Length: 181
Image (tube, rainbow, N blue to C red; front, side):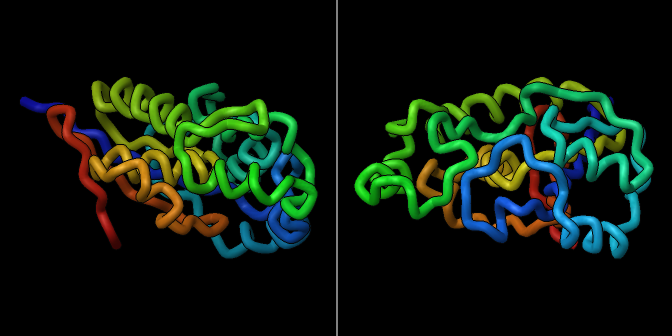
């Protein structure tokens, strides 16, 4: 009998970084984020994981979920750009980072590195069964979607992940599928 994993990826609620158009740090939820969570019902799952950052932990807690932290779900490392407004980053550096998945001119993590990290995490998760919820960041949800579909790295920026959205992935025999509902 093959193992079946139902994995729900929940993007954390809004933070001020989104509204301020800046690279996130370890930000708490904003007032808007707390309002968003009033409209969300916790899904029925067997296990809950969360990224280590404050906004993901607060999102899980607001839904009444007891979550285990998982470092593999951490936010993309923005290096020296962390906490800075996007407008403060030299345009050429930002353009290079947005167009070259291996570029990390900011001293942080490249998109290619994030995808590799997420792929390893998905490989680990594929060996499990049951219903799992992972409260994480839009960047990780994008990466997981790209990996699950076997899409090219260039697809990363074409996946739009809004706060408190759920992406459903299923794994059977190590193969991932995206489930729309």
